[in-house]
Image 1 (cartoon, one colour):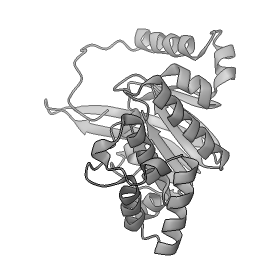
Image 2 (cartoon, rainbow, N blue to C red; image 1 turned 120 degrees about the vertical axis):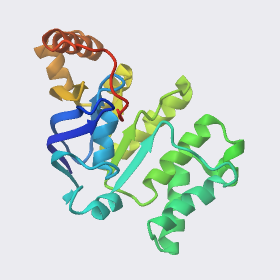
Image 3 (cartoon, rainbow, N blue to C red; image 1 turned 90 degrees about the vertical axis):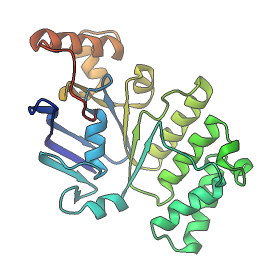
Length: 260
């Protein structure tokens, strides 16, 4: 459902040089799977996801979503993908219903299908009590539910979550994780990008660990933990990061001002 091969993205820095944010990245994600993309801040996660969602173009390499190439058919990709990040804005003066309706109309969903879909989503996410509440009067948890609802209103087969629980309290974060699991059970193809180890351990069967633009390891989480002789995903993560930094030391700790 998602196929990434040899994906590379370069940016020009202020000194006139080139910064490689992604370096020959390859992985695939299947229907009915939550694939974890795990890395520290600035590792290249968001750059990769922006390419998959057609916001950025790759310097070279292949990226396909549901059989559609991000370069040659970006419109086809956008029709089949939903994208949610932890800093998605909510309009203060629109109600929950109006916001989800607005995004449904942007996708061109006919009214009869759209309103049936909104009713279904509001039932599943338990949003009916905030149906007519404006964004300015919503709690953080309520806003996250609206963000999920508008991400999936067009029923995309592929969904990307980029740090969706960043800054949330424990109870709200748990609600988000439950919603992600429910979407997987519906057969959705999901990429879950985070640096929170416990979420990866809970949600993901397969993961890729990315650092400084490179995939350090990719595969089944538990098998990777056993192969590297680690006790859990956190130990695996830090061990791979240490090994990479020892083999490829950074000469200058100040990174150019480019997207992560």
